[in-house]
Every structure is written in C-alpha cells, then in structure tokens.
Image 1 (cartoon, helix red, strand yellow):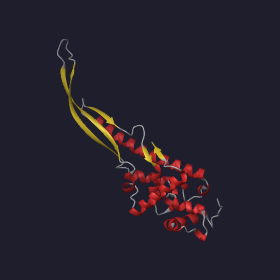
Image 2 (cartoon, one colour):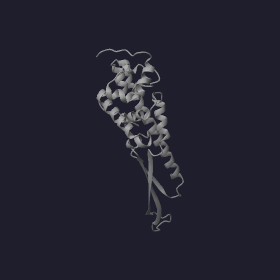
Image 3 (spheres, rainbow, N blue to C red):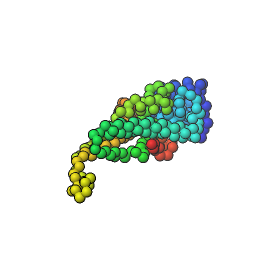
Image 4 (cartoon, rainbow, N blue to C red):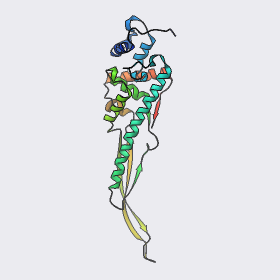
Length: 229
C-alpha cells in the first residue's frame, strides 16, 4: 500500500474534503492534485467512523481506531434506544397504576431483552444528514435521536371483559362469579426504516449517499455491524 502525506493541517484538509466529498467520490480527485488513500476513505465512508472530525484522532491511518469508533457509535445508538424504550415502559406502568381496582394488566414487549438495529445503516444516515463536519460526533448523533424519538416506540392497548368463578367465603356456599377487565399492552418499535425520514430527515440525495456509505463500510470492514440493546 503506498504511503501518502496530507498537505497542510489535517483538520483543514478534512474540512475542504468534507465540503466537496460528493464531487471527490465521483471523480476520484484528490486534495492538492495528489491521490491520497486516507482522503478517499474520508469521502467513501461515513465520517463518524473516524471519530470527531474536528479533532485529529489518528483514525485516518488506523483500522484499530476506526473499529473502536464504530463500536462506540453502536453503543451510543443502542443506549439512546434503551432510554426511549425504558421511558415508554414507565409510561405504560404509570397507566396501569391508574386502572380501576380489580382490573388486571399484562405487557407484551418483544424488546424487553434486546433491541437489534442495523448500526452501520444508522451511522451512515446520520453522517449523510450533516452538512458540517464539525457536527459529526457521537454527542450530536445521540441528541438527534433523542430530539426525534417520539415515534420510535409506541404501544397499543386491548381490553376484554372476563368472568371467573371464585370460592365463596361462606362454608358450603356456591362459588360466586367475578367480572373484571383484562388489559394487554403491546410494545412496538418503528424499526430502522423510521430513522431516514423521521430522525435524520434525509433528502433523496442524502439517502443515496447513506446507501453508498453502508456499501463501503461492508466492503472495507466485512459485514454489517449490529447494535444490541
């Protein structure tokens, strides 16, 4: 692999490349007229895998640092999703606490033990949504998800009336019938598809950029990373 050197301040180069990343990706052009592999990586991959682009983290020349950045991004995504999920459960439990005495309730929650997401896809979409490289960092990613989390998790309630026989308190008395209402709360997750339109608010052009990022992540790092909450 040929070694290359960045011209001038690395952060200044990153700023220039990021502003023209779509053109560079299409033409294969390089800053200063020199073909540089780190620069190609910068335009072909979502910037978050390089860490905070406003700092010189060394990720442009280190697969180890890139892998750690991907892991940290995955963890950040599932952390916010877990927060959103837990907030919904708290809302459900508060509603259950207000049910009439004698009613029963159960929660059907497929995400109680884990929430699986395509983290590579969400990282790519986040990066495609940002026009300023200084905003590409984990803090911004988490804040965007939190600001638009209302539709990520939701729940439906079904209620049915049931009648059962219970033993009478008096000896030798026939069983008495008790009627109550049973409520079932079912938790739903909007899924990865929700993020493009409702969290990151991508244009059609940005969606194509995100798709390219995902393909390149898979090509360079072998497979699609998953997040598990």
